Image 1 (cartoon, one colour):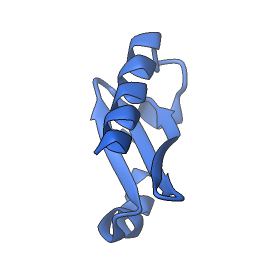
Image 2 (cartoon, rainbow, N blue to C red):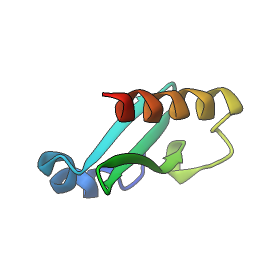
Image 3 (tube, rainbow, N blue to C red):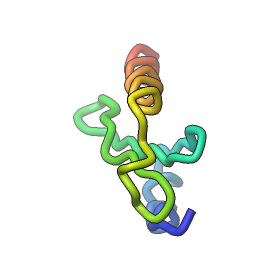
Length: 69
């Protein structure tokens, strides 16, 4: 998708960062004080234009579910 998600590999491996693909967008969540928080949500080439309200709703649900676990 031509963005920097690969630079988060070490953080993903250590369990401090999560990456999800949501229909053409990439969602990144970081752990802060024991809770997951959306850190970034972009489309191809770091575009914000392709992140729709529907994508944002799914991202918030993912964040909520992770924090309920």
